[in-house]
Image (cartoon, rainbow, N blue to C red):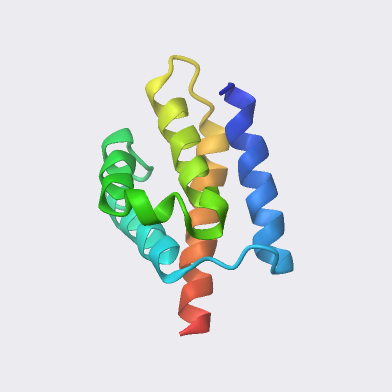
Length: 108
């Protein structure tokens, strides 16, 4: 993984979400909502919150939608744990999670 990988993955998933090529499952929307809830007090996603969310749905999360959200979460974790944090990429990833969460509200 490289620092640019998070930006690229986020842009790809955002495009696919907008075009309908990626339709998040209930599990993916739940994980997005948990991450946004955990991020609310501090204003950004934390490595601990991502690890907890992945642990919650780890096995099924890696299978649904070809594990696309799972890979994004791995790249977020990598970015958060690394020294060369890309704040803009993390903010974009968090915005994507918010879109996933909103999309779920429209579906239900």
